[in-house]
Amino acid sequence: MTPQPELASTRYCLAKPGYEYLVYQPKAGEPFSVELKAATYQSRWFDVAKGVVAGSGRVKSAGGRHEFRVPFAAEAVLYLKRP
Image (cartoon, rainbow, N blue to C red; front, side):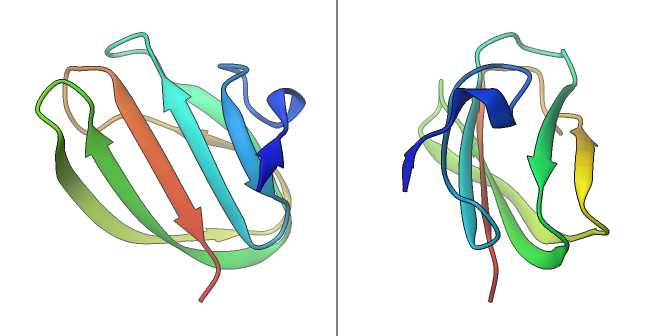
């Protein structure tokens, strides 16, 4: 992955577009968007303050901007990976 700040509204993004994305959201409670290639991705949320995995699932994107809401009230990292 390489820095790709233009892909996330937070501007904190490492990505290999279409395969994996790592996005940091420093503003607790604020939604953010990520420009994704069309695919289904496995998702994993990390709670930065606690240093733990705080949720996982799947995200299906048709391509384009996809909005995310952090499922807890703290700084977060979202990891998306195409299986």
